[in-house]
Image (cartoon, rainbow, N blue to C red; front, side):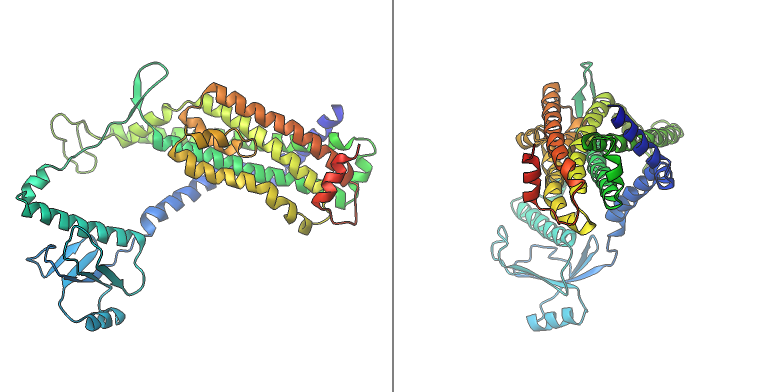
Amino acid sequence: MKNILVILKKEYLTRIKNKSFIIMTFVGPILMVAFYAGAIYFATQGAEDNRTQTIYFSSKRDYVRPSESTFTFDKFLFIKTDQPRDTILASIKNETADAWLNIQDEDLRTLDSTELISNGALSLSQNSALEGFIKDEIRQKILQNQGINKATLDSAEVLGGINKLEVADSGNTESSATGIKSGVGFAMALIIYMFIFIYGSMVMRSAMEEKTNRIVEVIVSSVKPFELMMGKILGVALVGLTQFLAWIILSVALISGASTVLKIGANSIPAGMNTSTGMAPPAGLSAPSGGLELISQLNSLPYWEIGIIFILFFLGGYLLYSSIFAAIGSAVNQDTDVQQFMMPVSLPLVFGFIIAQSVVFQAPHGKLAKIFSMIPLTSPVVMAVRAPFGVPISEIIASFLLLALTFILMVWLSAKIYRIGILSYGKKPTWKDFVKWIRQS
């Protein structure tokens, strides 16, 4: 145990004194916020096509804007035409128009003879907008033919939205924070996913460097290979926790500052004033409070439960995978030998991250979410996504125990590989060699 602590201390102090570690500890949260803010901005704003698309329009049944030869919708300018097909296609090819919407259906309740021909493929959102617009126009025309006029249709439009609440532990209701919970869960899963690869790779490369430099031959003369492996794993784990705690403190400071700004901004708005129009809302309706609602949702999160789950599965996932990485690092002699072992080892973690994004967001308490949060190789990231949504304590305990038992088994197997692999030179290892080393007493 004493030797493990000595190696742990050496690994920890060497890495936290590194300039790149110090810089990334302070700059990391800012870079991450800037990265995701930029990604969200460009996804929502930067991808918009502000050009007006000219659409030639032909229809066998004049259900869509029959009294208008040209009309607009969103960023589309529709021009009705009865020109021959070849002439229209030539216009599209010459970029006189962007597309031709040709509706030749007799029964407009079923569009199966409608074509949209464009000069280059339109985007998914543009195709969806065009189809939705045409179907809505036809639906309104059919209803009007049945005696329901547009004023009646407009009066039947349902405004507002459902006020989503949850029952808190205290028994009171509070604002539902599904979006916030999804964002927090995804962020935690991403952090665990990245940290396992980053710090697991540190353990692997440390073992490789000591092996290739022949320093390990001196070290193992006074330290058992198992103690050397565990010292490296725990030392790098402590480095990861140190950096993560520093990020948490900095993030809390940033969030607190943003919350203060939002509160000041909300308090500066006159009572009853609508923030988007500058006018008072109708009687019986309260003014929107986006900033305060966001703060309320953040405050409603079960931070202690989320934090405990994160730390448990962050450590469990890291220790499990880093023990595997340490065994790989001790066995290989050069970087090119690593790939054949890293791919099958990494696939379960990658698969778990994909499952966390797809299945768990749709049904955090569903059957598949529960199954993958019990499988040790996927549970670190899957359980992290489920944490903000409230996981039964029995599931947390069962999942963590399975993870811990798998870690113990993997350390035992990895130690056998590490013991022989760290002193093996000249031969490119194979999976068969791993099995042989494990069987040796």
